Every structure is written in structure tokens, then in C-alpha cells.
Image 1: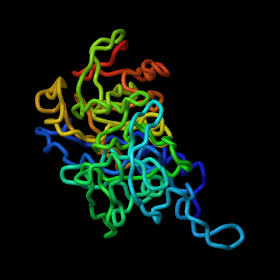
Image 2 (image 1 turned 60 degrees about the horizontal axis):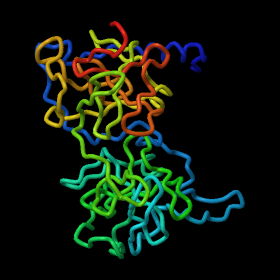
Image 3 (image 1 turned 30 degrees about the vertical axis):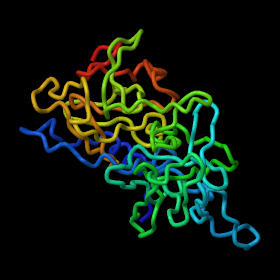
Length: 329
């Protein structure tokens, strides 16, 4: 039996406001989630990118399509170091394409969490023929076995990727995408410096705080990006009103181990219930502060930006105790 569009709409609307039972409604919280590397929602922010053309099976004429420069079938070859404007020194493959790392992967031990659609947008770099060129420490190169059994190159323990939208040597279009993707510096850290300086982004805890000159003490993520809360979300019980396309602009904060925080109120307004993981109705796991779901803003392009503050009168930077900056609850 066919479902009318009106019925489908009603079902979708009901799902968007579905309340989930979490530790915020239990006598004791579950253990903190360790799945920090869960694959992000579809898109450039993590597992996005179906239809990018990487690995397409053919052309309109019926002839096999030539692989794009960032195709996973392309070997890495001899790696080298290039200087990218506003980014600094980055690792490039034999074609001059920039290599990237994903914040939701891990380096100790190496583990990749970019599969499916994510791996179409961010093709893994094969490890088999990679070799260290000038400026690359051979000792930092390694490999990790992916779920499909292939070997992926690692640099300083971090799995290496190309970006499907980088088509020319020297492109760094993947830098900072979703606040999770960064060009690889020669030492395996994030390349995020100015000019030829080659400075790397400061290594911060998963969640911490900073003093903003206008907003005061606010929460930031491990990339220094401002963390926000949505006033249409519910704390008791936890509900989310940001689903679907909303997440393209407001990516969720993935679970962060409480040991990887600094300055965050882990107790919240109710003891032992403040810092838990929210199992969203769309299947994404989201970190909370005082049982309030937290997000970053795609409109913030660099650490320190607060472009999401006050957007729509519903989005506000969050304080370490979960309170919104400049709004009443």
C-alpha cells in the first residue's frame, strides 16, 4: 500500500521530536562512551559525499571512466612536503595532492573510522608503494588495515586520505571541513599555520574552555571551535530538534571521554548526570553537557570564530555548566 506524502511527513515530524531515555532519566549514568571515532553523518563533515564521482563505473558513452586524481586506485608514490598558503607545510603525494587526517580516527593505535560514503569523498591513501621523499621522516610512515582488508597509509599514526574536491596539485579545499578534516603536517599533526611558517594547530583536549573577549568563558572543542546549544532542544527528558539538513550547518559533537576534558562541569545540575552521551533518534551519538546536546557551527571557519552566536534567536555558545551565553533558559 502506498503511503501518501502527508502521512510520510507526519511520521518524519514525529521522529524528529522523539524523546529518548538516557542517563539523564536514570538513577545512575552508563560508562562514558569510548566510541569517539564513530563515523559522522553523511557529507563532507564525515560520512558525506555519495555521488562525488570518485570511483564512478563509467561515462555516458559507456566507456570506463578514468580515475580522478584523488581516486583510491591511485598509488601514493613518493611523498613530499609542500607549502600551502594560509595552511603551511603539508604532506603531498607523487601527484602533488594534499593528504589529510580525520579527527574521528585515532593514531594510538592507528584506527580508521571513515568508510562507505565517507571514503568516497575522502579516498584512503594506499600504503603499499608509499615512500618517504625529501622532508618526510621515513620512521613516521606506517599502515593500518581497513575493514575491507586493504592497507592504508599512516603518517605519525594518523590514517591518510585525499579529498575528492582537490583536483589540482596544491589544492587544500579539504582543510577544516566540518571542523574534523585537516591537512597532514610532515610530523603527522594538523597543518594549520600561516604562509610558509608551517605552524600546527594547538593540540587541545576534546572539550575545554577559553575566555572570549565578548562572550566570556565558553566551551570549545579540540580544534578550538566554539561549541553551541540549541534552545529548541530539551534537557529533561533529552530531545533533539536539530535533524536532517540542520546537521549540515550544526554538526554534532561526537562523544568525548570525560578524561579528555578540561574545565567542563562533569556533574551538571544533578550530580552524576551532567556529562553523558545522547543516543539520538537518527542513530548518531552526541556528547552533552548537563544533559544538553552540543554542536559546532559550519559557519565558523577558524578557531575563535563565534558566528553562530544568537543565530535565529535559538543558537548560543555554551558555558562549562551548560548555560547558554546571552539567553535565558
